[in-house]
Length: 331
Image 1: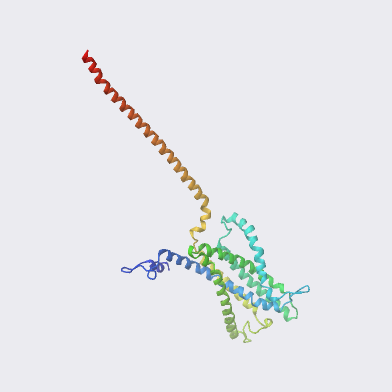
Image 2: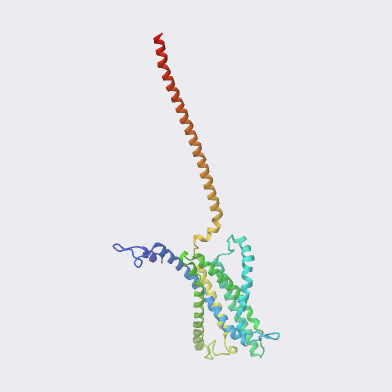
């Protein structure tokens, strides 16, 4: 891939260098950076697909559950607020407690790297889908018996996914901003929302595809997600399908993250004290060299004075010699 991109900066013989004919080396290097970041971006689409399911089917589940808290009726569409509440609580706790604790072991300024954050979030999203399938089994069994379980059983899957979203969303924003070219730092933060849009689109594709496939292979000739009544569907199997798909996606992410190399700027914070020490050393060296040159100049000036004094003495001696000879001749 890099060889093909490098050819974009080579100007053929006899051709004038115009912007649409040849690229600068800086432009080629920026494209290389973006191509290295694309697999990381693609690995987060499945997680956003899981998020789309939690914000659609989980609301439909909530309509068939016991929603009252005392005398107050808790609306089912308000359930997606739960992960946001978890993020509001856990993000400050992460910054003030987890990061200083992890920094002692890893030595990294942020505790763990951006890609490690994203990896933790991808694992937790798979766990969230597995828990969602278990909760759906319990909800459906109790509903078929005529009992409604509490709406807050959904808080388990939402709480786990809220933690996953905290790791992945914050990690991706930090990753894209630090690793993107300097001319695209602000634009690169929109890549996270690009992944979100692809995830929601893929959610619709999966629902239609699963219904089309399972309609042909199930004995009842009905898809897992047919109709509006979840009590007679297999939503739990769909959740577990997403959990397995998330695990496979995590393996793909591990492969993509293993060969990714951070930009050199990522370690500048670790090298700042050394740079300061080296600057101080250069200043001391300059001062010492300056002191040496001053001493050498003073020695040279002293040597010149001695030479001038000796030359003056010889001139005086030569002037006195003829006068003494004239005085002897008169005598």
